[in-house]
Length: 495
Image 1 (cartoon, helix red, strand yellow):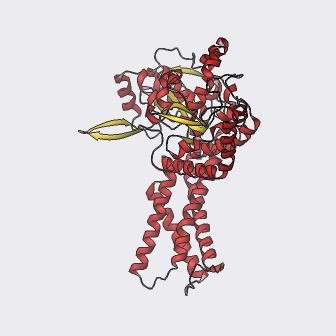
Image 2 (tube, rainbow, N blue to C red):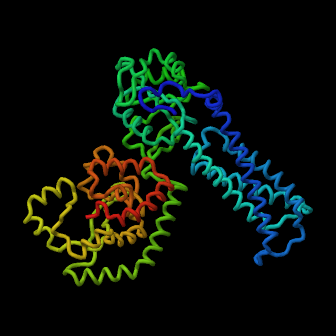
Image 3 (spheres, rainbow, N blue to C red):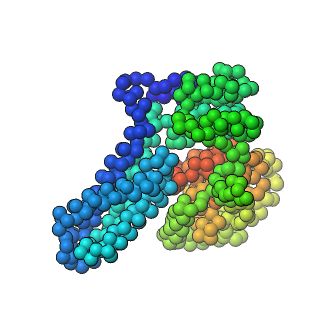
C-alpha cells in the first residue's frame, strides 16, 4: 500500500504483476471502460427487446417485425456505433474518465445522437423496420445502463486508489498559505487521485518538513532532476508564491510536456470554491468567478431533490405539525414560529422558520444569568438554557423545532442538505472562508448535524462546513440524509 506520510515518495513495490499494472494502469483504464460500455449497451438493448416483445404489455401495439435474430444483429451494430460515438465525445479521454456529472452529460448526448442517427436511417430506408416502443426503451435503458456501469466502475477505481493504484504523483511548487490549503484539501479528498510527493521551493532547504506531513524536495533550479527522481506526473504551481518569471520559466519547460501535466492555481484559493468561467475579451483570456457553487445539472438535481423531499415531508408530517402548534400555544404565551435572521446565498438575509421553543421574555431570563450569557456569546449555544420551554425542550431533543424550515426550502431560501445556517454576526468566525460558505444555501441537515451538533466545537463546525462546500456531490447529500435519522434518534448534541 502507498504510504501517504513522509516516506510515500517511493513507488509501491511488491509483485511483478502489481508493478506491471502500475506501469500500464492509465493505458488499461480506457480499454476497461470500452469493454464495460459495450457490455452495458448490449445488455440494455436486449432488455429493451425483452420488455417490448416478451412481456406482452398492453401499452405496446403488436409488431410484425420482432425477429430475435434481426434485433440481435441490430444490437451488435449499435454497440459498435455507440462506442464510436463515445470515442468522438471524448468519453475515453483521461480528462473525462471518472468525470461524474460531466461524464454522464457526455453519455446522454452521445446516446441521443445515436437515436437520432437511427431515426434518420429509418427515414432514408423505408425497408428498415423498427419498433418505436423498442427504440424508446433502448434510449432510456442504454443511458441508464451506461451511467450505472460507469458509476460502479468509478467506485471500484476509488477502492483501488486506496490500495495504491490510479494515483497521479503530484508535486506542488511554491510554499505559502495557499499551498497549505491546497495540500490539505487533496489529502482530505483522496478520491481526486492526486498523491502529493512533496514541495519545491527556493526558500526552504531540501529535506525540511513542509505543512506537517510533506517535505521540500529541492529548489526550482533542480526541477528537472526532481521530476525524474520522483517520477512526477502532475505539477501544480502555487501562483501566489511565485514570481511571474518563475511561472513563465516553468511553463516553458513543462507547459506542453506529454509526460507531465502542469496546472496553475488561481492565486485566490479562498474565493475559488465556486469554479470559474474562461472567456476571451479583446483576445485576452479572462477568468470570471461564479457567484454560486452549484450550476448546470448539479443545481437542477439538487433543486429537484429539495422540492421533492420537502413536499413529501410536509404532507406526511402535517398532522404532527398541527399537534405541535397546539402544544406550543397551550404551553406558553407567544407566537407559534420563531423567525431567525440568517445569511443565505451571496450574503442575502432571510428569516429561517422554527417552532418557538423559548419563552418570549428570554432576554430578561438570560440577563439574570450573566455566566450563561457569556457562554452563549462564546459558543453561540447553551447546554442548559433556562429560556427553553417544556415543549421546546422536547422539540429540540428530536429536532422537531426545525420542521417549518421545509417551508424555507420550498421558498428557495434553504436546502434540505447544506452547511449550518449562521446569523450575520457569525460570519466573522469564518474569516476569509466566509465567502465560500455563502456560495451555497444553508441546510436543514448537514455534516454538522450528523457529527454531534452542539457537542462539536465552533472551529470544527467551520471545518465541516468548508468540507461540504468544497466537496459537494449529490452522493454526499444522499449519504448525509441517510445518516440524519439515526443522528436525530440518538439525540447526541441536541440541546
